[in-house]
Image (tube, rainbow, N blue to C red; front, side, top):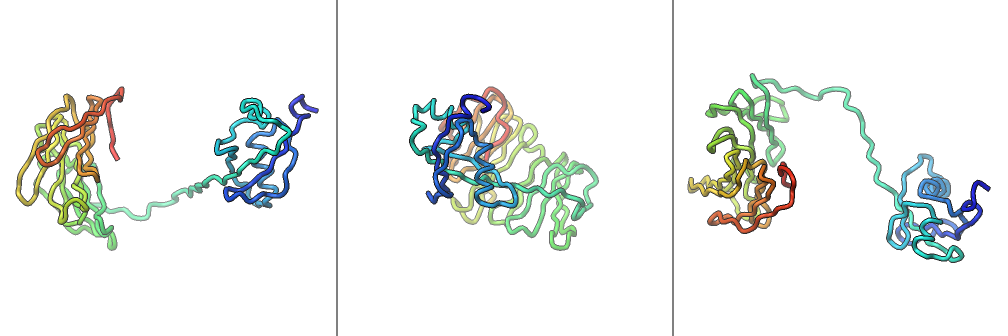
Length: 266
């Protein structure tokens, strides 16, 4: 007997998530924990490859020994304890041994890339001030777009694939993000929002050629997202997220709580 807990047993019944029992109820030592239960389940299922499992009692994950659980929950060790086993997801990562393709063309660093909605083209923005479009099937260049005088920091396809927006130094300072209005809110796509280090966001209408400025952040905007609910969300170095309506560009909500910069929105 290793210790006093090992000499005391708990009657347990292992079941799958559909409540199918894995054999009959069995006595297990009170010092049995999740690792021991994994060995038991793999053995009873005759798994050639040992799989990871998590275990639940009354919908709560078991993270301790059976004896500790019974003592904490004031459960009698004389009653049958039903334990549900749940297989964990297995992620097998294969190493990449080689580069599948290299597409050359830019003369400076590539700073931003975006796939077209149909997956046939790739757009890239570079420090050479150009935007290039590439055919992914042939891995050859389609177009070189010029016009920027500074680095192209961000690019974004419209959801319908008809427009491509590129951002460089377009506000008072650098543009940090672009987001299109979702296609289910407006089709064909015509409006997008850009955010900049000047602390402002701007709504652009490519058809009417109009711009609405969203001012309110005290520091640079680091990320912007046009939400599926029709509102625009901006995250900033001022540690806040602001929510805007898109007709008149009014601020409708401010979310505070972060202790540092808000760097991303999804």
